[in-house]
Length: 202
Image 1 (cartoon, helix red, strand yellow):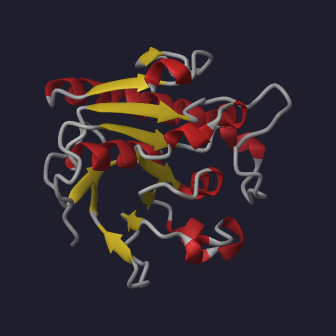
Image 2: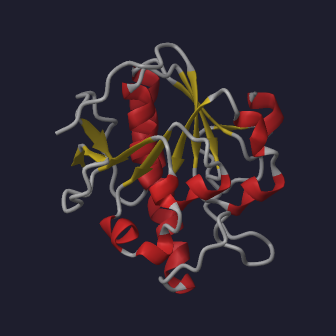
C-alpha cells in the first residue's frame, strides 16, 4: 500500500468535487494553491496537484475519464482492482471517523470523504470544499464537468442523503485532529461545515 507523507504541513488544501456550483466560479484563482480533484472534477481544473477516486467503475469506463492520461499530478485510489502503475493505492475503512494511519482513508459513499482524509494526511490545517453541493443545479445539471453520467438520476437523492450522513459522521474527527473544514458554497445542501463564498476562502 502507498502511504501519504506530510508534503503540505500547515497548508490550506482545496478539495474540488463535481457539484455544478463551481461552474459560476473563476477556478483559475486556484493556481498556485494546493488542490485535490475528485474523480472527473479534474476536468474543470486540470492543474490540480492530486486526482483522487474510490470508484473503480469510474477508472474502468474510459468514457467517464477522457483525457486523464494527460493529467500530470498524483493519482490516488482505494480501488484495489486498478492495476495501472501510475495509480497509488490506499486502504479504505468505514467512515466512522477519519483514518489516522497514513496508508488508509475513510469513506463509503463519497470519494470526497477520502479526499478530505488524504488532505489531512498531507498535513492540511484547513480544507476548503468546492462543488460539495448535494443537490442538482436549478436547470437539473448534476455535475460541473459536462460528461455523460451512466447512472440514473433517480438514485441521486438517495446518494446525496448518504453523503450528507457520511460528512456529518466524520466531521467531529476532523475537529479532534485540529483541522478546519469550510464549504465554499453558501447554497450547499451540506450544512455540516461553515458555508462561505469562494472569494472569502482565498
